Image 1 (cartoon, one colour):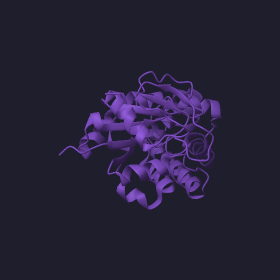
Image 2 (tube, rainbow, N blue to C red; image 1 turned 120 degrees about the vertical axis):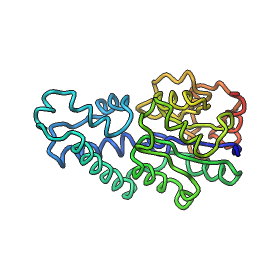
Image 3 (cartoon, rainbow, N blue to C red; image 1 turned 30 degrees about the vertical axis):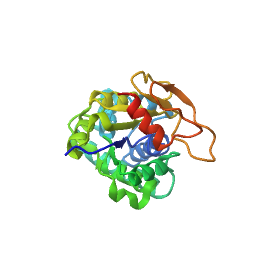
Image 4 (tube, rainbow, N blue to C red; image 1 turned 90 degrees about the vertical axis):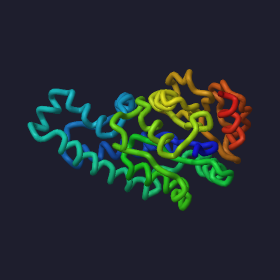
Length: 257
């Protein structure tokens, strides 16, 4: 049985500004903990974001012969697994300490969508533990109503559409009635590659990326009492005001068919 409307969120950069204030410091703390001869600046990490997946970003370190030589001939697969577990723990600690607040509008839109009977899910190729920690921080007990597809549940990371195809298939969603919220070109390509419409909420790392395939591109979802959102591109039927509403998302979905 195919369900009605659905809203599928990416995690990093969408539910919270996790890359700059969570993942980057967690990576660097992990490098320091294991005595690795590397520290990523904000600019360097911005380049690493072109690589989907935390373990994959860490694996790219071995492309530097000096780093590979310093680490030695140990089992790289085991090393990456150990480092990534430590990095995930460091990230979860930052979330628990309240260092990574949800982005504006996330809790409001999710609550409204669930109240109107929409299916709400999260689809991310980040570690599932990290994704659940961010989601819990954003929506509290509503997390029990939100299925999460994350981590290594698919063999290929974004921009491959595998994670979205899995989400649609497992939940029995209609591609015509499912709207994805992403923040990056890799995520946008993953969503459109699965035949889904996509709304993009940019962040500092992704604002200048190419979002030509997105139906709507905004600075954030926004909230009452905050400065008005910026509409960077609108190829759908929505007419956003100071902040996006569930009706705007519905029109974005319907007007893009």
